[in-house]
Length: 122
Image 1 (cartoon, rainbow, N blue to C red):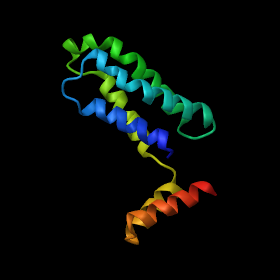
Image 2 (image 1 turned 30 degrees about the vertical axis):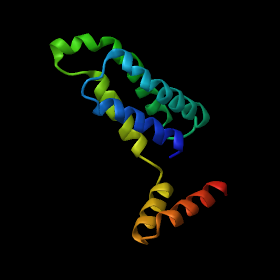
Image 3 (image 1 turned 30 degrees about the horizontal axis):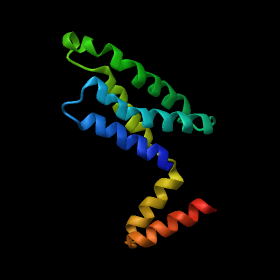
């Protein structure tokens, strides 16, 4: 996946692992929303676009209903954020195979980075 998708997943994971996140700390998600929205618009024909767009809408709206967690003992926004991270981890096979082959050949980090750069340039 693109750097924007990976960075968005990192930001969302940061929100998920923070034990004491207040409502105004959700501004951390703004870059993730922008990057994911940009990827969705740029890749309309990708197989993840529709699901990722629906999850993005949910993650944007569900913090508004967070007070219902008093009765349900479950924040639905956490489930939606987890689903986004799961969708971002579903990379296409050709990207996954490149990562696996780099890991199995035990190349150095520099070699793997240079190979990734040459793949992206072509």
